[in-house]
Image 1 (spheres, rainbow, N blue to C red):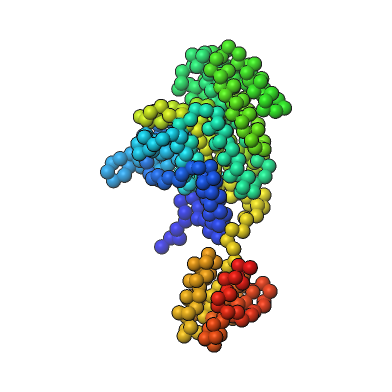
Image 2: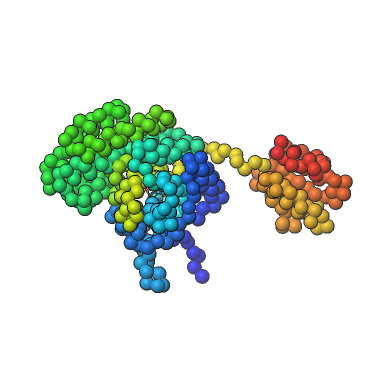
Length: 424
Ligand code: HAM
């Protein structure tokens, strides 16, 4: 038999890495809870048509597509947004708005594998549906910031733009939507020459080049410059004004680094307003991204429903946490191993282990039948806090032996005092 490997771009997560992922999942769930987002779980496999409709060429070309045995064209989800928009047009259609929905899980893109870029990766995803107000955009930026902050990451920044500025210019100059999409996709990759070559009209080219040249000290000045640059382009002016309103709300209610980039574009086609990415300059990769998509739900056959959302890349956050040596906050408490001295006392020892778990203590029971010294050696090596040793004589007197492994101290204590001692 050959030795099997994982499929290219996909990984097993073990040990410390699995622990970090689980930690981030937990923090993402907790963040969802404090912002009032309810968790939903959607299928990993969706109709190809749904996933490819408005995602953009970039994602369409990188999907894992196959026919199921019923000859249906399906694909592995490359993101959550399409699935959540589908929910808003079906089961949740009549729910009162706004909807605040959270999901976490794996997504699949046939990207070229490298550090921080995988074909199977994990996202924590937040969607706020039903509001066109800047307050909703602000909430999405604030919750992203809160999640990254509570994970203990430092020196991260928000790169922010408003896709309505570029689209507003191009529409008013008569550039059709397909060309606009292609231009935005190239601008997302910073291939500006290739993007501008797609434009036949000189006016649009000069306008976009002008956006690229704007450089200011802070986001307020940058937006002022954008406004001055797009005078006469009504939709672009409105987009710049909208961005100012959003960022004023955000910056007055939290402390975060905001960089407005006038020529910032995203390859995802459904965005209609705010767009942003969170990145850590030292890593040069985005750890999250999002934006407003006011027409997606309608495009899926639902009622016109404005929406805004974001997704964080859990794999990349894990890399950032490792690079920045972020300490996981102890949420686990003490770890205990319970060892019966002989077979005769194993039922009683098992009951003690059970009681510890009921009280929320992590307790491993000795299931290998090893000698006491071996079991203790193992617990010591795996950095357990305590060993609870259950012997017949002590048990009959209502006691157990508790050994504090780091200090190598052991005492006999009443069984009733065990929890108190471990939690102290
Ligand atoms: P996205 O920017 O395509 O947005 O992806 C979000 C995050 O997923 C990225 O910032 C990055 O951290 C992570 N990511 C993307 N590709 C990879 C990869 N190949 N390997 C590892 N991590 C990756 C979306 O997916 C939108 N659905 C976000 C959204 C929600 N917009 C509105 N609502």
